[in-house]
Length: 188
Image (tube, rainbow, N blue to C red; front, side):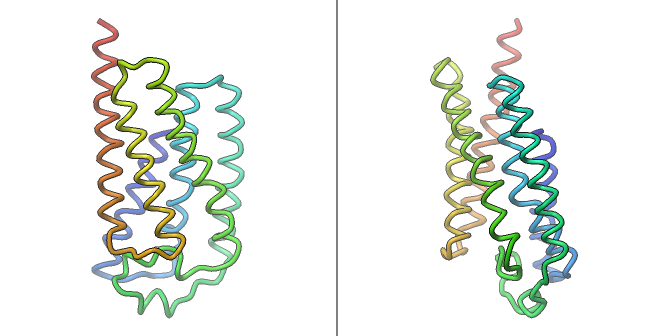
């Protein structure tokens, strides 16, 4: 499930980068917006598969898939404010400005539970085995990402959004790298 999340993160980052040079089209904006919230939910699903009873993970996966498909349909059927797409500056900081209605209401139902599961799973993993310090990095990365997303969603200044997002991703990535080393060491 983390592979799905990483693919969505790569997609959203690439599209945000491309918007700086060529602006937004309706389709690129829709794909960008779709890739944001389900990404976090899929990270939560991956965390549950690692730490919880598989039935809980399957329930959350089903929830994530149903809401993600609904989110996808809503994004591609909700009118996009094309004036915002062409005039918002800088383009990569557009966030949810060009879309309204149900997609904005559904988005938190994916990102908030996914983020809480990711953060809670990382902290729980550290609590049951204090030698897994890498889980603290994953938890901190998740907290930074969640705080950054809340600030962006609820009208905060987006000036530092990408900086905080990058820092959060670095913490997540370092935690993942260290977990790989822990697993290699544990197998010996």
